[in-house]
Image 1 (cartoon, one colour):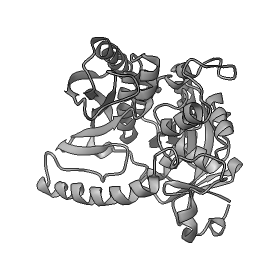
Image 2: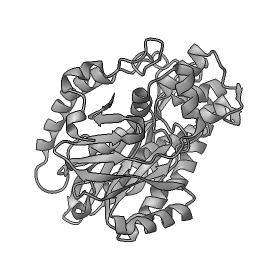
Image 3: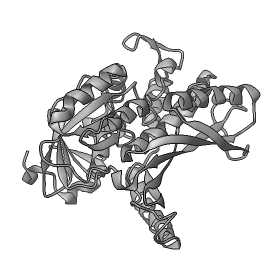
Length: 381
């Protein structure tokens, strides 16, 4: 596809417009356009803090906007940091009165970002805001955090809980909570990976997700619980399980696999966590290239179910959800077989889903869906 076929920028204000009868993320309560505009002002302020520490320990080595940032400890050691939460997936946990998996998600959302810069995660800190410090709630949250830490190979040296009854309500009386955290990793400042060395011909290897992971739940809940009036105990034949069990499936933690990839001294050009914004996360790289997605595996049935029931456009589905690809490894073609072998050894399905090309503009072309991605939005072409 030629750049001349890209939809004009002047039409960008209409990116969220779909079939009038369809649902969108904005209608579910998440306004990406407004967020972008407001967040730009916020980031303008916080980046000024970089000047408070100049060269030496504490120096910020990258810019805000990638998956994790790095601060210098010494010439040979950097500290990678990330922060994230579970989002409205915690509401599904409350609806099911089951809290022993969202801790895995919280660890995953942070450590999967840390590995994107080539860091080795070492520890995780949690923050839990509570309506009430119910003993069974905290016990199960602790179980999930422990399991997430085990899978990631990190410690949990501390955290914080706060009783904020007036702030946190939730959907189950007394069990309202929010869960977030911060991941910390180590990296050689001379080996930071941000896609800066991508060249034409590099391959995009997509690693399977376990489902929604921890993104798009506002839209999924709108479809299932508001529009369709289903319950978490509704058995869905095409899922082979109840809706609640599907929606609480934990996020895959890719840390052990990526640690092994990095230990093999392969020509890994970029590591991309496919979270909110879906495959558009590829566009975060520090290179001016075009990503062509030419072969996507069939996504888990939960995605087609959401799309069919909500009558959601491809533009919106691929902007909100991972669509079955939870992580991407961008690699030199000669190293693809080694990457595939390691994925197989760790029990994670993978396949080459596309390639990189030189381009005057950073764009994403999902060929089979006729989607053209620019920034944080897809356009139908």
